[in-house]
Length: 256
Image (cartoon, rainbow, N blue to C red):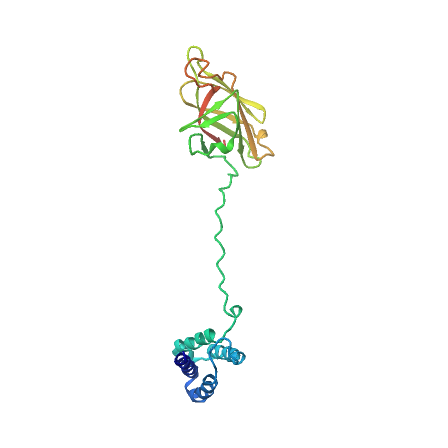
């Protein structure tokens, strides 16, 4: 242990001398050697205050040495390391390692502010669920059935959007000759704008939405009223008791 302490003192002295410019090395080596030769390098020794002062002086000197610090930086770092580890400095004196802030958690995808000009698919993965208010069955692979005698939607639009055209791709639940078509009455903001007859073959249906129905609002409320809705069970087709009328594959609001 004594040999290790002696070697440590010698290394510190050499490092301190080497850090000085060439024209001052001989003058600095002697006082540094004299200081560290008489110090006991243990944590609780009587020279602890003196060592602490010497530690701060040496670190300041390392930072201020100009040409020598680059050439002899390994020795300087060794000396500073030995002083940090041998003077019994408290944990609060050592540099604090601050953990980086945690990564920001992923935020939810915001709701669209405007669906005008955007095709909304009513099949699986199309995202139509966010716009369906009531009267819709579960989402199936390529479409969604209405369920009951009314199906409502709430679509976000820009303020004062003006006149729009509603387009829906629909197929009706029919059973000729008992039920040949499904009658669909289209209401926007409680005003009737169209009446469609939807058969058993898929087709596109359109209706014009007057500008006064979009004025002063960012949400367009659409209702499909379905007076002929019925269940497959009531027609003897299956055990499905849902009250069905039309299946929607997609919807779009378009500018004129």
